[in-house]
Length: 272
Image 1: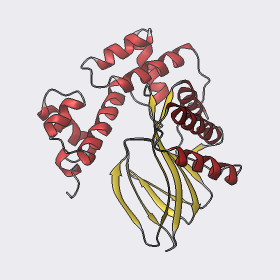
Image 2: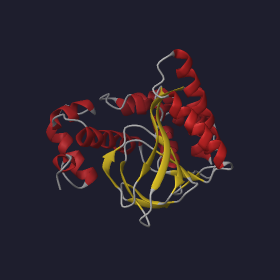
Image 3: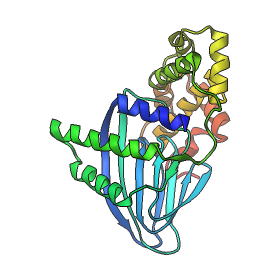
Image 4: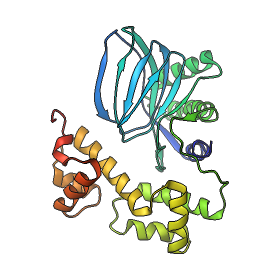
């Protein structure tokens, strides 16, 4: 699968940093409150079944399955069938950052025993304080992601039908740059410059590849990051606007309402 392979290639070429790891058993009737994820996470379900929600999508995840959940999506889940659930997972960041996967990816591991052992080695290394443990954790995570992504399936249709060529690769590189510089006021213009393609050709290939134009993609990055800040950080709407590239809080609020169909204030925890 093209997008999964590109993500894996970027992850293997970059530095992976372990941010959290755990093996946890949740009691029957457990309900995890919604939160906006700041980091992607690979999850292995070793017991039970759960209803998993990301933004406006829902999945039923079963014992023996693995999922890779991208960052900056609104997540909550609950156990299903009134039975306990046990999860092993790790969270990570990629440095330098790369575009997030567009949806949840899923697979059933070829060897559940192998994946459990790998997850437990990663959990035992957290927090990785020495350089040796940092490198060991990175190696384990890359191996786990490689096994997962070579078998994983997207839960929505996100692949392009054609093979990558020069323009595709140029756009992919430019999109990675955009993911790290989305606060720049001239982000789209500089992204096109990064591609070394003509503006019209860049926009055409970008639209074919991502099903949206560069300005729409930039807005998506900014709005998802803004929702995370509003939901998970104690900062004012004005500060959020500044942190995602808007000098005018009024303009930011108008764009936020247009994108999410509600004002920024409704994404504060405890509001309805």
